Length: 538
Image 1 (cartoon, helix red, strand yellow):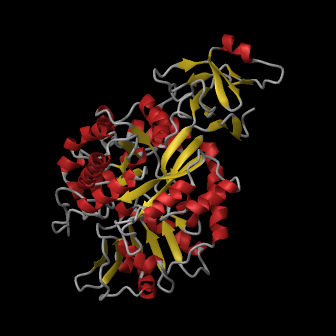
Image 2 (tube, one colour):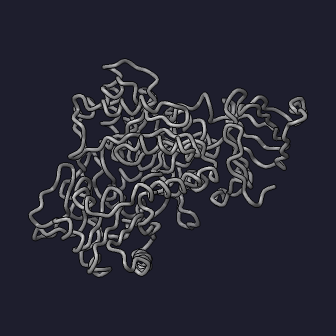
C-alpha cells in the first residue's frame, strides 16, 4: 500500500489520487488516504510517498537494445555539436584504441560534416594504418584502409538501394549510403555471442532505473531466439515486443511466401513478457544524408534533382503489408520523408482493403516531414504516430542543415507533433535509444515541451509544435502501452491493472520545464514487485 502521494493516474479523465493498494501484483484500490486504510492487514507493507509524484511506468516503443549491446566496443562520440569537438572526441577515442585492429565510432553529429560526408583526407588524417569506420545509422564513413579491406574501389558497383559516394573522378570518398554499408560491415569485427549477451544484460538492467516497463525492440533481422534465451534466463527487466526486421538487400526474403519466417517467430513468442508479433519495414532512409524519400527534390549543393529513393516500390510495399497484416502481424514502418510517409499510409490502407480492418495497431515512426494532406489519414486508418521528441530539438542539423536541404516552406513542416496530435491520431512517444538518443525518458519529455537541446539558449525549433506535459506523458504511458498491445494491462493506474508505477524525486507539474531532464526515478514497481530503488530513497 502507498499513501501520501500525488498519483497521476493517466485514466480517461486524467484524475489525481493520493493512495493505491496492491494485491497479487494488481491494483485493487486507487483513491484517498482515508479510504485506503481498509486495505491494511497484518502483513501489509505500507509506503509513505512523502507527497512525491507517482506515474504509471513508461513504455518505450522504439529502442535498439541489442544493437547498442553489439556496439559497446565502439567509441560513442555523443553527437558533438561542432567539428572541433568532433575532432577532439575522435582523437581521444583513437588514443584509447591503441592496439585495436579496427577503430570504430558511433553517434557522430553528421551536421558538422559536408553534405556528402567527411572527405577521405579527413578520415585518413585521423588514422591511416588501421581501418576506421564512423557509423551514422543510415550512412557510414570509412578511411582508405577500411575501403581497401572491403574491396570498395572505383569499379565497385552501387548495390540495390545503396550508394557509394564518389569524387569527380569516380573514386570512393569514404561515404557509404544505405545498403552500400553492407559491403563494409561483413569485414568489421563483431562480438562473440557471450560478449553480446553480457552487454545486453547490462543495458536491460538499466531500464528499471528509467521507469521503463515495456519496450518495442528493433535490432537486427531477427533476434527472436536471443530474446527467448534472455527471457528463459530471467534477463528481461521489461516486457518486450520484438520487431523483426524486414530489410531490403541480398538477404531479403521473397515477397511471395516471405512472411513465413516472421509468422514462425511470432507463433513461438506470443507471451506477455516476450512477443514477436511485429515486423519493422524501412520505407526510406534519413533526411541528413538525403536518403529520406521526398515528393520534391532536395535543395543545395550536389542535389542534382535527387528526392531520395524509397526502399520499395508502392506495389512491393503494398504486397508485404497485405500479407503480414493478413497473418495478424503488426507493422512498424520507418518513414522520414513526406513521400515515404505517404507510401506507408497507402500500404496500410491497401492492407485494410484486402484483408478488412482489424485491431492491427500498425504504426509509422520518425515522421520527420509529413504532408498536410496525409495528417488526417492517421486517424482515418487507425495508424499510430510513433514520435521521438529528441529529434525535434533546435540542434544544428534541424536549424541549419535541414533548412538548406528543404528550403523554408518544407522546413517549417518538420516534426509536426502538435499537428499530428490535433489531427486525432493516437501518439506513441519513444526514444530510438540508446543508439540514436538517450533512453532516459525525462530528456525526451523536456524536449517535447521545449523543442530545445538541453541547456540551449537559442530559440525553440518551431515552438508551435510543442506538446504539453499531460500530452507527452500520455504518449509515454497509455499511448505507447496501446502501441505494444498492453493498454489493458498497463499504461494507466486503474483498478484491475498490473501494478506498474514509478515514484519520482520531483513533481514534473511543479518545476521549470528546462529542469525536467534532471528528474530521477526513486522507486520502480513492476507487477507489484520492486525492481529498482534509488540509494538515496528510504
